[in-house]
Length: 76
Image (cartoon, rainbow, N blue to C red; front, side):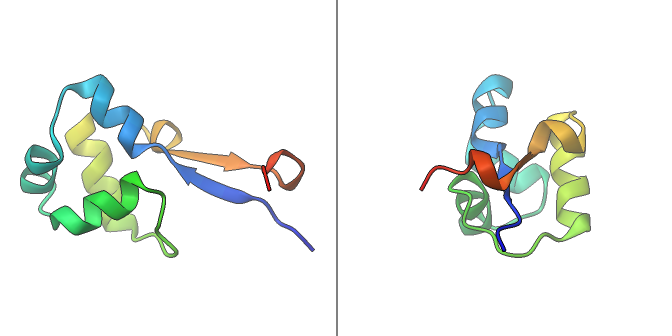
């Protein structure tokens, strides 16, 4: 059974905010590789502390950062 997927919209939020990945990694106290993985949607587990840091630094809500894509909308 297919359950859908979660899309991380960090790359879009970064572009809209004008912050660089380096600035975000410094302000959110994250490694640059971790930021890159979020931007490429290559995360398999989400840490709520990391999500809170990203939302705080980007001044956004969790719904701005994450999007649920139902199974019937997933491109194969």
